Amino acid sequence: MNANPNIAEVAKLVSDPSRAAILTALLDDRFYTATELAGCAGIKQQTASFHLAKLADANMLISQKQGRHRYYRLKDSNIAQALESLLNMAPPAEIRSFRQSAEDKAIRKARTCYDHLAGTLGVMLTERLVNMEVLKGEEKDFTVTEKGAAFFKELGIDIQNVKRKRRSFCHRCLDWSERRHHLAGALGAALLDAFIRMDWIKRRPQTRAVTITPKGKKELERVFNISIEKELIPS
Image (cartoon, rainbow, N blue to C red; front, side, top):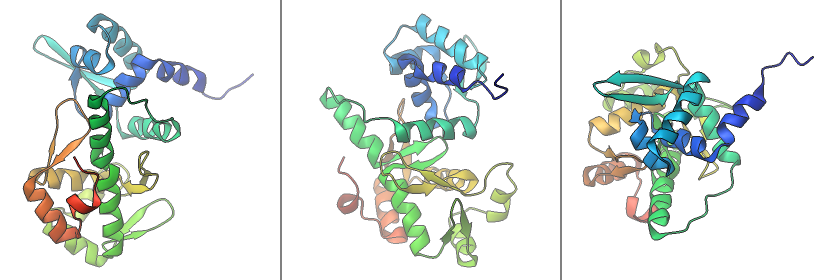
C-alpha cells in the first residue's frame, strides 16, 4: 500500500488546459471573478465556475464574496511556487497572433511572479543587488548585508519588519523565461510594493505583465544602472 500523498490527483487538476489557464492567470496575487477568469481561459463563465469549485475543493484557492460577486485568488505563495516550478518544465506556448506575441514579450520583459518581480527586469534587479553587495547569494537563499539594510531603508523597506513576517525572508526563485534566479520571499514582495508605491512600475489589468513608468525608467537607471531601452526587451 502506498501511504504517500496522492500527487496524481493534483496532476489531474492542473493538467486540464482550462484549469491551467485559470491558475496561471491567478499567479499575479490578485482577486478575480469567475467571469474575468473565464475570459482569461477562453471558456464560458459557467464552465469557469465549475473549474474554480474543483480548485477550491482541492484547497488551492481562497474566495471572498463582495456584493453580488465572488472573487478568487491563489491560497498562498506555496501554491504559486509549485505552479512556477511547473512553468519551468513546460514547453513555450505557441504564438498564433500579434496580440499573443505582444503579450508574450511583455510577460518576459517584466511581470509579477505571485507577489514579487520576475522576467528580465526581476532577474537583472537581483543580479544588480548582488553586484552592489546589497545581497549575498547563498545556495538556496539570499542574505542581506549591512550595506544592504541601509540600502533598503532608503527605499522605505525596514528589513527587521520584513523578517518578522511568517514566511521565507528572501529566497531564490527560478525564472521560467530567463532560466536564472530572481529574488522572492517577503523581501521580494516588499521590493515590488515599494516600486509600486514610488510609481516606478504599474500593474496592468488582467495580466501579470507590469508597466515601467517614465519615472521608473529614470530611477532604475540611477539606482541600479539598468537602462530599459538598451537592456530590456523593447515594448
